[in-house]
Length: 439
Image 1 (spheres, rainbow, N blue to C red):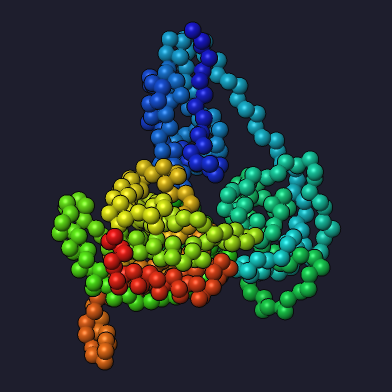
Image 2 (cartoon, rainbow, N blue to C red):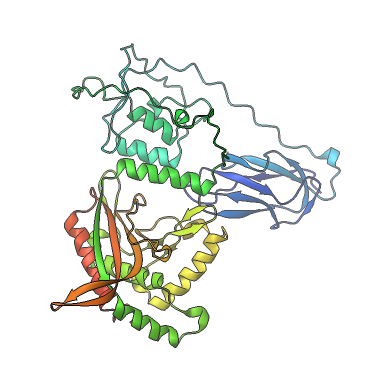
């Protein structure tokens, strides 16, 4: 019988995943394990998955401690030795040599390479000119986080020319932002001089000498990715907002009749109906079912609707695939399942990756209207407010109606105001004459 140890490696949970957090070890060195038995938990940006043992044996060594963030795919996490092997006979694979020390950084470039993209205003003062040394051809291309890669592609930045944070070891969103803030390329016409402002560091805003009690919390993976994506969306996408009020009394009466005939655990929620209406509206106005790619507009052939769900670790957006082809009861059943598993951190990556548009509903918290931030690279997102009884004028008479305010946030690079207005009008028509919603 072989005495070779079996490697436990960081898996590639999703196609675009480059790293993850080793959240916990479920087994300890010396514990017996069976092939397929969960031995650790891996936390990605949206979910937590169990890492299964690749073979029967004894967990012999742990190379990466629980709680370690940014563990690259393929990293050796631990070793499993055969159950009958003498521990002293197990010869673990040789440790990987430490990465070579990076060569000394070139002197700072006087200016950033390509021009600043809209949404990232140039800032800071221009350093004194210095002779620029081109990057060495022998240097390997730096590792880049997915978000940084998208930002660099959008802004036309060559990541090989970005100065790395020596502690990070790879190009991050912060590196791209610093490059964008360095100014226009050499030879470009200088913009009108702006008043020079004193440099501001985030740390200076949180004065540690204050006697106000506080407690710092580490970010969860979900919260960190949400922060990066929302910052990216707000800085790069030119948002515009459109709002419309919908009279929903007829829809609510139709829902009450449907729920009276349904089992208790199959009752339709307002959110189920809103998702159905948004899906049908996007199918009727396909010009709004788009995404901005940086090089053009991507037009989707179906409606995959993401639905924002609040969890203890942050915001997650599970997706109802082909939502425009599903009846409201099917959508309701899928949403119940997706929402429960999202809050338990049990979604598979393919259940939250992608999506052509998003619905964000805060009406259950009494919020009258919501102006959401885009979920990049999607072209638009619905913000749903609360049901409110308001006086309305109909045929020169004032009456009370149940109203709901919907706000559409849209990327002006991907669609125009008229398209957004058409989408909202269609959405309102579906809610106010709900026959199609319950078909």
